[in-house]
Image 1 (tube, rainbow, N blue to C red):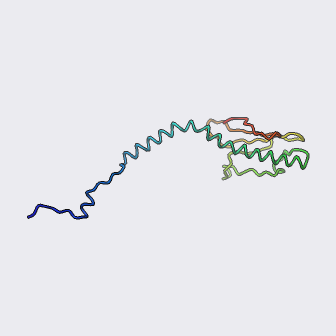
Image 2: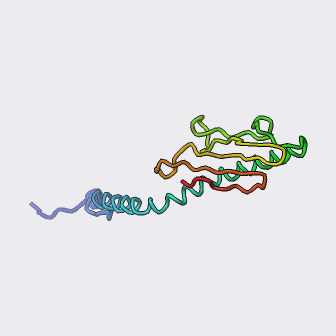
Image 3: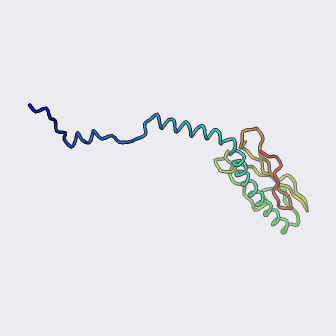
Length: 145
């Protein structure tokens, strides 16, 4: 009998090895990525807080514009938010996207002050971010998060 075995095309396919990444290599790469994220996250938190504070600045500028329009029409600033042409965005607690609540602190014939207070703690330190705007129209950060 002939001991020579001729391989069929089907058997030749299975003999070839495909270069691939195994499970251990994949887990090591994921662990390295996780460690790098843990190292980078504390450095990124101030940037995240700063980016979210832009919302407060934009909305306070809108309140300033609404107050200015109201003053031109009524010769005084309003201390009631509903009298202004301003609708506050829905907060994250109301299934919206806003991270701040807005209120008018004081208003009279020549001055007003409005406040935006964060409802979420951006960096987890227990201090909420607070911004204010007055009749000058420049938002100021009162409490930094």
